Length: 245
Image (cartoon, rainbow, N blue to C red; front, side):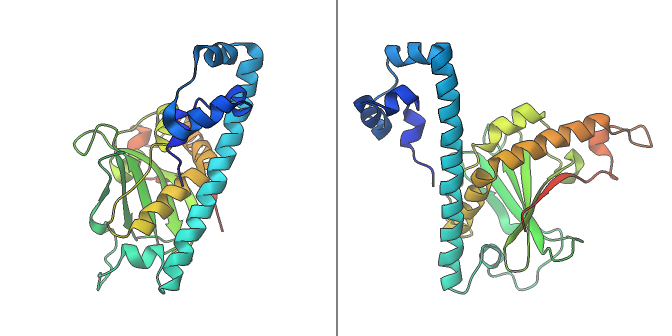
């Protein structure tokens, strides 16, 4: 549940302790020169860093609430994020990307699809999430995959090698910078599914960043037996993972 006012607010502790914060956070103002100068001091920088961390924790907590809300609303109708993603599919085919046509939000560049080919016990399949910063015809960067069980409950987060999704590879720092931009507001296949996925990315942002960093560490140290590029080594598929259940 992202609040647009936070993108306008300067988020500094000085503002939070005065009436300017209420004006700034409501979206009608921006940081003043005084606030910018204060944040540039050592005390201001330290306080702002601490405050940014608290804002990250707050965003994670709100995202978890949104995840729970989406799951509860779907459950009231006897549905789940998985059943809504596969709604209308009479026969599930391994490796086929669902929903048909995939999902892309042109306003944010967020992109995702679901498919099932898992050999992990208890896992039905997984959502692959991407960011297309330059639109649908530009490069596509894989962020993280989310494995779910047959009831649509998230089991794990994991990163994959480049050959798996044939995306445009970015180093860890550049990939992590895109994670916070994954925000889907689309009606297909179901708005609640899209908000659930967005919530998962926000709620587990720190874990996802760590997975992406580990991904690059593994790739850098991996030497394929045939001497080929590590990004194309078919023996290296899942690179890093984090268990949720």
